[in-house]
Length: 277
Ligand code: SAM
Image 1 (tube, rainbow, N blue to C red):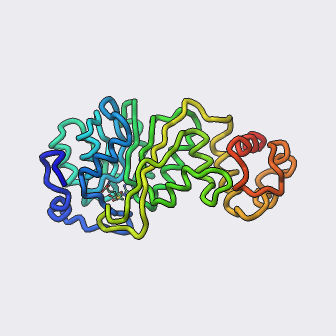
Image 2: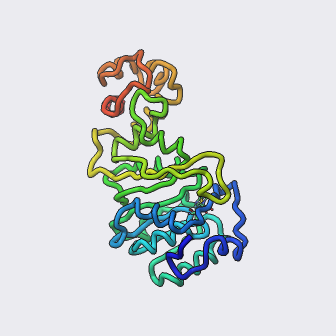
Image 3: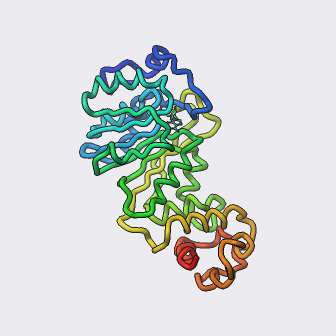
């Protein structure tokens, strides 16, 4: 582990501040600063950007983002035990790190950020999907962020970039491909984390498109797709029963056979259906 800054190694930071990992907060820390810098680089040139980081923990990725040149990092951390360690990073990078002790699901960070904005995070597994859905489904597009560079469990990452007719294709793939270009940027084995989780992880990089690929209302599309994949083995006329009257007619108008299953339906057809509901 080579030094990227003059701060103590992360292993020492977690010992000094008693940061024993808590499962309930999804705490699997990255302690290799070379690796956190590499993850930061997946977000591109950060020099003119504000970065929103959710869950900085002891600050490994935060330090990577700052050493890679982020103009400013806004870090939102729920666990108050991490604040003293993060204060040391604030002192080492004067004026470039703001830390807010809050639940990321409760806080709207926009007022603390100046565009261009990128989101980079090793997300807590228990709120990662919920945050992603929120970032992908604001009423208006383009969103406040230009890109999302996010660590997920590998299985979730594969669901985000999945293609129709694959087992992993579902709500996340439809919503991600509707408004973004999405790709897996890195794979990480369990041993990259302390403590190691049971499964592998991957970093997904999503770039916001200037406008959605097809017109649709975000909330309606999300609801239709969630319902369609909730019972993915059922035919759509059954899975979507109750979503709207005459659902069979609407499916046909959208170019979807009522006997099809959700995993065979492409983005354009889902958007067309959402427009009819
Ligand atoms: N970024 C650090 C790293 O890479 O080593 C820690 C990542 S760890 C997977 C997830 C972090 O998110 C933890 O520090 C945890 O306390 C924090 N966290 C969990 N739930 C949160 C929430 N709802 N809002 C903000 N932070 C949260």
